[in-house]
Length: 71
Image: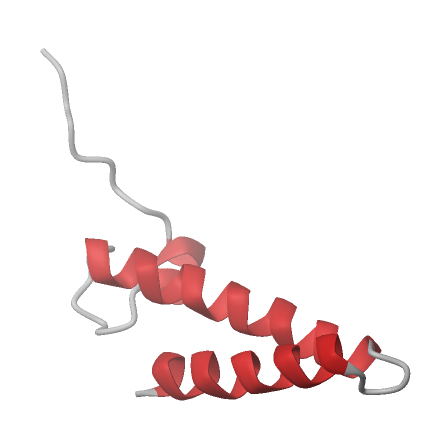
C-alpha cells in the first residue's frame, strides 16, 4: 500500500498554495520557485556597487520576473 499523495502541513500550504485551494499543485510550485528567483535577482541588483552591466541586467531581470510573479 503506497500513498503517492503527500499531505502538506499548514506552513507549506501558507507558503506554496497560491490559489488557496488547499492543495499544492504544479503551478503553485513553479510560482514559489519564481518568487525565490525574483528575490535573488532583487538582491543581486541591490548589491551591484556601481550599477554596471551586471547590476542593470539583474535589475531588468528582476522587474520582468517580478511582473510575472505578481500576475
